[in-house]
Image (tube, rainbow, N blue to C red; front, side, top):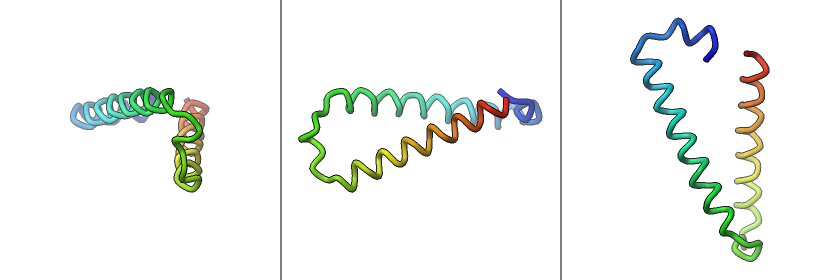
Length: 69
């Protein structure tokens, strides 16, 4: 973690680690489900576009955080 994490108390660090664990689990579940999908499963283009935009945003956030460390 970054230097900022050194200023957190034990409860805040535990909460961050728990959130990170839940994010990893969610990413794993999403990956598993997407691997099963075929293009015809996505009949709603807008929902698929929203999912893609959300994933792109998450990737940018992660890239920004790692670039600062």
